[in-house]
Amino acid sequence: MMRKKIRIIIAMLMLYQSLIAGDVAFIVADTTNIGSDTMFVNRIEGKLGYGVRLIDDDAVDTFSNWSGNFMGIIISDLAYSANVASLRDTSIGIFTMDRYTETEFGLANSDYRPGGHGRRLVNNRNVKYLCSTEADTIFPYQYDNQYLYYYGDLAAGAVVPFNTPDFVSRDTACVILLDRDSVTVDGDSARARRAFCGIFRIPEIMDYCHSWRLFDRLTTWVCEDTTNDWITGYECWNGHLEIDACWCEMTTAQNDSATYNTEFRFGYDLDDIISFWRLISPERKGHGGFACDSLQLLFPIFALGFNGAPPDTIMDVRYTAYKIIKDEKWHGPPPDAGGDPYELDSTWVTRWDCVSGSSPVPWATLDLRAGIDYDVSALDTFRLSYPEDSIGDIIRFNIPGPVFDSWAGDTSNNNGLVLKVTAVYDSLSNIEYSVHSPIENALSNSMRIQAWFSPVEEPGVGLKSNVIGTGLIE
Image (cartoon, rainbow, N blue to C red):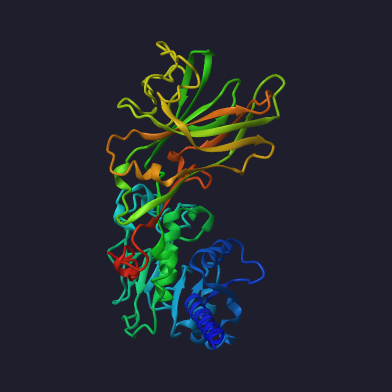
């Protein structure tokens, strides 16, 4: 009897889980080649926990019983808008990324692309665009004026969760919501939730945590699943506007080095390249009720330099990240500056300058000093080798969350890391690796900094809330 009860309970739990997870329909242009939509499908399945059924836009008219099979519908920007018009009165939520479906779903009466708006979304430091506790904004990249799309002449019942300060008109938005029973452009009532977002034109450029958080929230909102474990269980911080980074190398003598802020580099150029990373505004990153799980530093390699005579083709070293010991003088050179000579003192650490020119300040040791300039304990290491690590690969460091939490609310602006070679496995190593610095955030392969947070409350206490009240709409 007991075993039978256990089996019944297990069956009920399995049924409950399947009802929670559910499937979403993803309307694409071609189910045999979904291209960039792969990123969205992977996100839905891997993070939100839904199953995904791909449906060709040509087959939309022949498909029936949408509400009986799916939690919601997502429409790719690559889908043909005329084909999906028949979904207008479907009684489940629809999230459209198609820039030409404004009238099909009653959201607005016009669509267009305003030139020059993409970069402004990310460069304006208004933290209330997406979530008031997150330091950064979403990341649309203006690509040939074809990336950021707006709808105009909005429906009477439309809700605009955020907009740019220089939006095209007061009746215009790149993200629009219609809740169930809201008034559409033709005066009808929306049969279910409808959402549009016009910033996912090129998913690869949107691969930043805040743009993904927006995608997550829109998807779960139209599915009426705003207590989704991924939504309630994690927050993110994306800090390319908050990062100052530079690197230094030996120039003419063992105690003479130059500091640069044009790129971020690793490896050797006849001597060790030492890189520095600094959090400019740590006080802007607070998450009430959340603790940091990890801080991720991602350095996509975009160029290599082979040094020596003849040029070396071997690299096998270990790079290690350490927490800097703070000093009030600690700062980096201005963007696009550095080298020999160089106007501004570039003290990054407690006692040793990294500067060259008419009045160089010597280093006592080129490798800095553990316990004086940086903590003795290593935070993370990366074994850098060529040809295994080459252009297109990523140099990755995962810094423990408590390190990031220790910087919360610290206004001294001297929190950061030193990244240096701590082991050389092949003496012929003499290759430079270049990555774009945070100031070049418009590039798809620039340095990326992001942190993930999870709630510190007891499970089930104050964590479940509707997305409308937790940041998507403020």
